Image 1 (cartoon, rainbow, N blue to C red):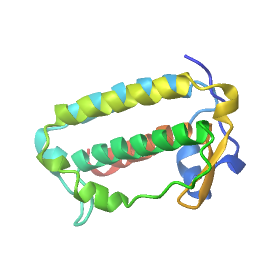
Image 2 (cartoon, rainbow, N blue to C red; image 1 turned 30 degrees about the horizontal axis):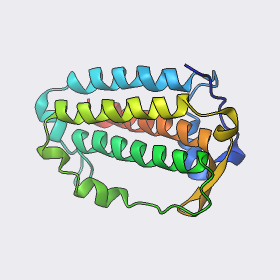
Image 3 (cartoon, one colour; image 1 turned 45 degrees about the vertical axis):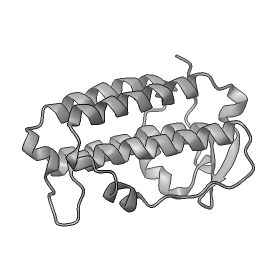
Image 4 (cartoon, rainbow, N blue to C red; image 1 turned 60 degrees about the horizontal axis):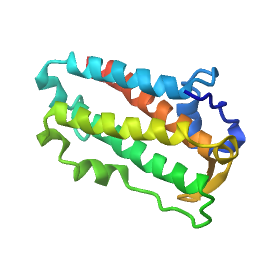
Length: 173
């Protein structure tokens, strides 16, 4: 797989720093996305089934809801990356993550069904970024009043996943 240089801080909004800082600066982000999916799947499937719908505190998401949120976020950020790579000049909208989780139906879904979707989205994400030119990776676009480069969105996807997996390890294991 191709190498993708880690973006500079000027390439993404300040809120994304917490995600991007979780990632190595080895340019192997696509390999990490592939490997991290396996790690996440093994971790989640090792949990007792009753932990998958557990809330460690009122109003917090369950493990199934977190995984579904990761999928939704990845799908949205990959779409943004496609738009930016194709030089879309229209600002893209934001999304309400809490509403997406509320209406996801995650807790009623089988975990294997969720991972089937997760794997399909992850494979599409990797394929998208693997096929982009160096020029496309450094194009900017705007979503929800925030400018970012295409490669920054790739790193956001990977770091966002790591952020939530770290939270699962802290609060659900």
